[in-house]
Image (cartoon, rainbow, N blue to C red; front, side, top):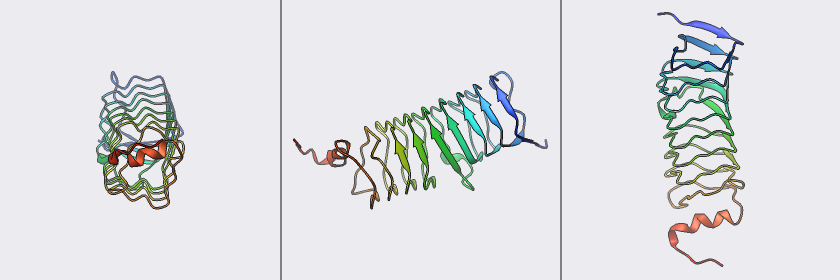
Amino acid sequence: MSKEYLTEKEFLKIDYNSQPLPPADFEGCSFQQCSFTGADLSGYNFTDCLFSNCNLSGVKIIDTTFNDVIFRESKMLGLHFETANAFLFTVRFEHCMLNLSSFYKRNMKKIVFEHCSLHEVDFIETNLSEAVFNNCDLNLAKFENTNLEKADFRKAFNYTIDPEINKLKNAKFSLPQAVRLLQKYQLIID
Protein backbone atom coordinates (compact mmCIF):
# COMPACT_ATOMS: atom_id res chain seq x y z
CA MET A 1 0.00 0.00 0.00
CA SER A 2 1.49 3.38 -0.98
CA LYS A 3 1.67 6.23 1.47
CA GLU A 4 0.10 9.64 1.10
CA TYR A 5 2.19 12.77 1.59
CA LEU A 6 0.37 15.19 3.89
CA THR A 7 1.63 18.73 4.55
CA GLU A 8 0.42 21.52 6.79
CA LYS A 9 -2.62 19.55 8.01
CA GLU A 10 -4.17 19.93 11.46
CA PHE A 11 -5.58 16.91 13.24
CA LEU A 12 -7.77 17.83 16.21
CA LYS A 13 -9.28 15.60 18.91
CA ILE A 14 -9.02 12.34 16.98
CA ASP A 15 -8.96 8.98 18.74
CA TYR A 16 -6.55 6.82 16.76
CA ASN A 17 -7.48 3.80 18.87
CA SER A 18 -10.83 3.56 17.10
CA GLN A 19 -9.60 4.68 13.67
CA PRO A 20 -5.95 4.09 12.74
CA LEU A 21 -3.80 6.92 11.42
CA PRO A 22 -3.77 6.63 7.61
CA PRO A 23 -0.48 5.43 6.11
CA ALA A 24 1.27 8.71 5.22
CA ASP A 25 4.35 10.84 5.54
CA PHE A 26 3.53 13.97 7.55
CA GLU A 27 5.33 17.29 7.10
CA GLY A 28 4.46 20.49 8.96
CA CYS A 29 1.39 18.85 10.49
CA SER A 30 -0.01 19.36 13.97
CA PHE A 31 -1.78 16.81 16.11
CA GLN A 32 -3.75 18.42 18.94
CA GLN A 33 -5.62 16.65 21.72
CA CYS A 34 -5.34 13.34 19.88
CA SER A 35 -5.14 9.91 21.50
CA PHE A 36 -2.68 7.40 20.07
CA THR A 37 -2.60 5.13 23.16
CA GLY A 38 -1.18 1.75 22.16
CA ALA A 39 -1.28 2.61 18.44
CA ASP A 40 1.28 1.27 15.98
CA LEU A 41 3.08 4.18 14.29
CA SER A 42 5.90 1.99 13.01
CA GLY A 43 7.36 3.17 9.72
CA TYR A 44 5.59 6.55 9.72
CA ASN A 45 7.60 9.70 8.92
CA PHE A 46 7.02 12.93 10.85
CA THR A 47 8.96 16.04 9.76
CA ASP A 48 8.51 19.48 11.35
CA CYS A 49 5.42 18.23 13.19
CA LEU A 50 3.87 19.19 16.51
CA PHE A 51 2.10 16.85 18.93
CA SER A 52 0.27 19.00 21.49
CA ASN A 53 -1.86 17.72 24.40
CA CYS A 54 -1.74 14.21 22.96
CA ASN A 55 -1.62 10.82 24.65
CA LEU A 56 1.06 8.68 22.99
CA SER A 57 1.50 6.20 25.84
CA GLY A 58 2.53 2.72 24.77
CA VAL A 59 2.81 3.68 21.09
CA LYS A 60 4.92 1.40 18.88
CA ILE A 61 7.52 3.45 17.01
CA ILE A 62 9.68 0.89 15.20
CA ASP A 63 11.57 2.63 12.38
CA THR A 64 9.43 5.76 12.84
CA THR A 65 11.10 8.99 11.70
CA PHE A 66 10.97 12.00 14.02
CA ASN A 67 12.74 14.86 12.26
CA ASP A 68 12.36 18.27 13.99
CA VAL A 69 9.32 17.11 15.96
CA ILE A 70 8.03 18.94 19.05
CA PHE A 71 6.04 17.15 21.73
CA ARG A 72 4.20 19.61 23.95
CA GLU A 73 2.06 18.90 27.04
CA SER A 74 1.76 15.27 26.04
CA LYS A 75 1.64 11.99 27.93
CA MET A 76 4.19 9.56 26.53
CA LEU A 77 4.58 6.71 29.00
CA GLY A 78 6.74 3.72 28.08
CA LEU A 79 7.91 4.80 24.62
CA HIS A 80 10.94 3.01 23.16
CA PHE A 81 12.69 5.73 21.19
CA GLU A 82 15.65 3.38 20.64
CA THR A 83 13.50 1.56 18.06
CA ALA A 84 12.73 4.76 16.10
CA ASN A 85 14.67 5.63 12.98
CA ALA A 86 18.05 7.06 14.06
CA PHE A 87 18.52 9.05 10.84
CA LEU A 88 17.70 12.76 11.36
CA PHE A 89 16.29 11.98 14.84
CA THR A 90 15.64 15.46 16.30
CA VAL A 91 12.97 16.01 18.92
CA ARG A 92 12.07 18.50 21.63
CA PHE A 93 9.90 17.86 24.69
CA GLU A 94 7.98 20.61 26.53
CA HIS A 95 5.81 19.90 29.58
CA CYS A 96 5.66 16.18 28.79
CA MET A 97 5.35 13.07 30.93
CA LEU A 98 7.90 10.57 29.57
CA ASN A 99 8.07 8.20 32.53
CA LEU A 100 9.34 4.67 31.82
CA SER A 101 10.50 5.61 28.32
CA SER A 102 13.81 4.60 26.76
CA PHE A 103 16.38 6.52 24.74
CA TYR A 104 18.95 3.70 24.90
CA LYS A 105 21.97 4.43 22.65
CA ARG A 106 20.15 7.33 20.99
CA ASN A 107 22.14 10.32 19.67
CA MET A 108 20.42 13.33 21.22
CA LYS A 109 23.09 16.00 21.18
CA LYS A 110 21.66 19.44 22.10
CA ILE A 111 18.19 18.06 22.91
CA VAL A 112 15.95 20.21 25.11
CA PHE A 113 13.66 18.83 27.81
CA GLU A 114 11.50 21.61 29.30
CA HIS A 115 9.38 20.96 32.41
CA CYS A 116 9.27 17.19 31.86
CA SER A 117 8.71 14.22 34.11
CA LEU A 118 11.43 11.68 33.26
CA HIS A 119 10.94 9.09 36.00
CA GLU A 120 12.82 5.83 35.37
CA VAL A 121 13.79 6.89 31.84
CA ASP A 122 16.63 4.87 30.27
CA PHE A 123 19.46 7.12 29.07
CA ILE A 124 22.05 4.30 29.06
CA GLU A 125 24.76 4.82 26.42
CA THR A 126 22.90 7.87 25.09
CA ASN A 127 24.67 10.92 23.67
CA LEU A 128 23.20 13.81 25.67
CA SER A 129 26.11 16.20 25.13
CA GLU A 130 24.94 19.81 25.37
CA ALA A 131 21.43 18.66 26.36
CA VAL A 132 19.29 20.94 28.51
CA PHE A 133 17.11 19.60 31.33
CA ASN A 134 15.12 22.67 32.37
CA ASN A 135 12.87 22.04 35.39
CA CYS A 136 12.87 18.29 34.80
CA ASP A 137 12.25 15.55 37.35
CA LEU A 138 14.77 12.76 36.72
CA ASN A 139 13.75 10.49 39.59
CA LEU A 140 15.33 7.04 39.07
CA ALA A 141 16.44 7.91 35.51
CA LYS A 142 19.28 5.61 34.41
CA PHE A 143 22.59 7.12 33.30
CA GLU A 144 25.35 4.64 32.48
CA ASN A 145 28.10 5.16 29.89
CA THR A 146 26.14 8.26 28.95
CA ASN A 147 27.77 11.27 27.30
CA LEU A 148 26.66 14.24 29.41
CA GLU A 149 29.47 16.60 28.39
CA LYS A 150 28.32 20.24 28.51
CA ALA A 151 24.80 19.12 29.50
CA ASP A 152 22.85 21.56 31.65
CA PHE A 153 21.32 20.11 34.82
CA ARG A 154 21.18 23.40 36.75
CA LYS A 155 17.38 23.37 36.90
CA ALA A 156 16.93 19.58 36.97
CA PHE A 157 16.15 17.67 40.15
CA ASN A 158 15.99 14.17 41.65
CA TYR A 159 18.77 12.86 39.41
CA THR A 160 21.38 10.31 40.43
CA ILE A 161 24.41 10.30 38.16
CA ASP A 162 27.59 8.35 38.85
CA PRO A 163 30.55 10.50 37.68
CA GLU A 164 32.73 7.40 37.42
CA ILE A 165 30.68 5.71 34.68
CA ASN A 166 29.44 8.75 32.72
CA LYS A 167 31.17 11.52 30.74
CA LEU A 168 30.52 14.77 32.62
CA LYS A 169 33.22 17.14 31.37
CA ASN A 170 31.91 20.74 31.52
CA ALA A 171 28.41 19.62 32.53
CA LYS A 172 26.55 22.25 34.55
CA PHE A 173 24.99 21.57 37.93
CA SER A 174 23.69 23.74 40.76
CA LEU A 175 23.52 23.35 44.50
CA PRO A 176 21.96 21.74 46.43
CA GLN A 177 21.04 19.15 43.76
CA ALA A 178 24.69 18.66 42.69
CA VAL A 179 25.31 16.87 46.00
CA ARG A 180 23.44 13.92 44.44
CA LEU A 181 26.55 13.29 42.31
CA LEU A 182 28.18 12.04 45.51
CA GLN A 183 25.27 9.89 46.61
CA LYS A 184 26.97 6.53 45.99
CA TYR A 185 29.74 7.43 48.47
CA GLN A 186 27.25 7.67 51.36
CA LEU A 187 28.84 10.88 52.61
CA ILE A 188 27.34 13.13 55.26
CA ILE A 189 27.38 16.69 54.00
CA ASP A 190 26.18 19.57 56.18
